[in-house]
Amino acid sequence: MSYRPEFGGAALAQVYGLPSDAFDALVIRILELVDQPWDATVAPPGDDPAFRWAVFGDGRGLVSFY
Image (cartoon, rainbow, N blue to C red; front, side, top):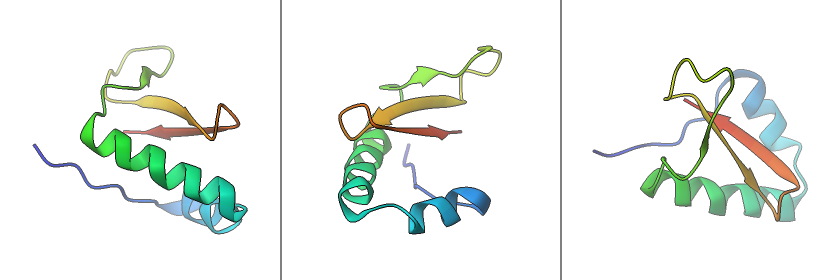
């Protein structure tokens, strides 16, 4: 299966506002998650295991995805 990252809505606006080092850390983490999406935590309340979150930038940022 192949995955493709896509930013939408408010997330897209937030990405444009990131400092360059935070943006780079986010891109690196997203590329990791494209290969291994299960390397993220199921978001609470945990009803849908496809909705997950992961940290990036040495724990200074959070990305959630479906």
